[in-house]
Image (cartoon, rainbow, N blue to C red; front, side, top):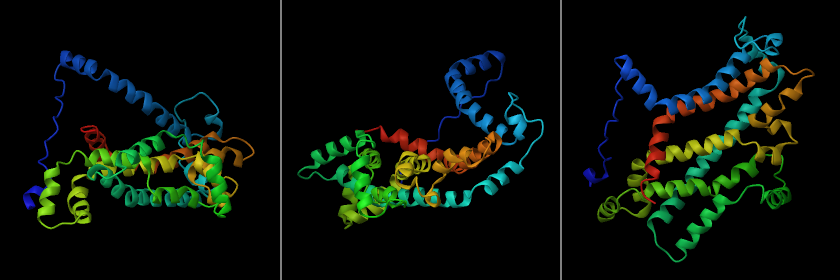
Length: 295
């Protein structure tokens, strides 16, 4: 049992060889040319945002790309111009609670769809696929009317509660990942007397950490950058704004547009997401890779 429940042996990833001469260097560039171009395309805007954020007001309006003087005090000025800590707290509340709620609700649902064959299971899976394809704008009016009748508009609850009931994309992602686990592990656990909850908690979850990390990261990134939902439900109540709404309105908070402060606010919004992705990058890539092994 112990041997069966242990994680499968990890295969060390192949380490690409470093080019040692000019010919090998040209071959390396040719092989990685697409990745290098994509890296430059995605990195240049981030560098531009950071460099603009440390410029003076006057230089930020020019075409100069490199700061003549570095004004790191712009980041402190952002907190003086707007209640960014309040917006940061709202974003963390929305993203963290929605991610935790997604895991608590979507993991059991994905396990049931992956491992149980019951009457209507195929119809439930097709309904899940249909829910993934449904644009959120289609159901915006009836959902807003429902939350308005409940008196919850102007708060973050209309954004958080749906994740407590399950997220269609996360259920689909986790179901595909659960299908990659051999049935023998589950049978061995049943022979040892584990019930279905114990199998899920003690067997499947430790073996599917990359998939859970990928689903969590997807949910956190979506809720952190969500603009449509907060604009619909809390747009008229400024003290409930998350950072996505606050950043879009930052330019309008001042008489003249201060691009250096706007870019400084943008940098502050990007930092938590970049740090989270850097720490979870390995699990995220493994989760995405293994999800497509079995359909």
